[in-house]
Image (cartoon, rainbow, N blue to C red; front, side, top):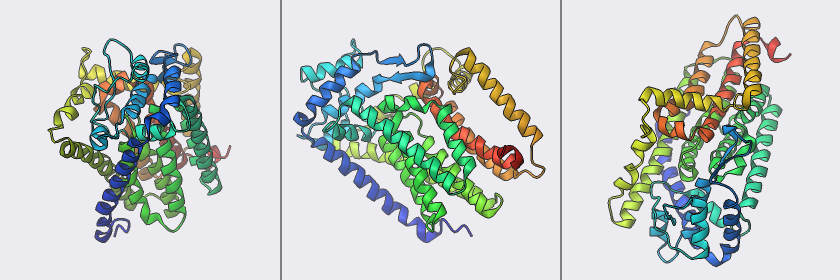
Length: 427
């Protein structure tokens, strides 16, 4: 019997869902009540930083993998600024910001601050939980300070995860985590608010899952994935959402397979149920936002939700579906480090790939755990399924969606461990 999800335990998920939704809603409402006069100074400093550069710019000229998105950051800060405590629930549901179509979003945000311009553009379809965090943080920090804080958190959490994996005897995962962060140029992530949330969630969930699986509370891991899907939807701006499922799931499965000695049906069922619970938490949280908005605003919110669906999927720049899909896959793959860093990076990447292929052939196992390899392979290709499903979004925003492949790199590390002789790993 699958011990992790008995009928009695299923009943806990509705209670968890209601509790987490209530906590998220209360947190967002609390942010609305933060006085504007207390954050104005830091908001003005943040607007000044944003207007120093274009809304999109490369840290390393001509390298898309280093592109920073200040367009989304400007909107996020503008939403945080425009929250109105005179009608907090409606303000929260609309999540509106000031927009003048002929100006870029950096200048729009600055203008709204300088001239106290009211919000005129709704952004109802997301929870924008990250805007609530940003509003609280502006009590103490401006945007530059938040970037620094995110950089410190990302570095500390990555280091903590690697050290814990090493200390608990999972060296392949430790190496895989380090390689995955390098492959997606994680050092650029803290320079844009939009990029950061899923990485922080991914690392925190991975660390908690590691403690649960190596302790006596592995039965709580499924609840953790359910909550992870909810929190991801609450904070994320549709960027690299699959990271918060795939990355910790690979770690949990690796630990369970090591304990069992080989991959079995129980592990496959666990992977399927974890993905189902994460997806359920993610989708229901989104639907709950729309339903709450419909009730609070007393109008049909469906048009606001569906107006961008076709754009995210099919687009309007004249490419065929096959052209979109192939272009999205190629663009995202080409950003991986070192492939995305010029001709020298491409040569280095090819050499690394050939080295791994050669050694995998020479040191391949006689009895490969095929079930484990297939399971990790399926998880590793989930980001590409997402690229194909939302091919227009992934085609246009490849400069940040490519980082979802961090989970793919970690899955390849797990596959190598189960496919090659230990002599290669210990070399």
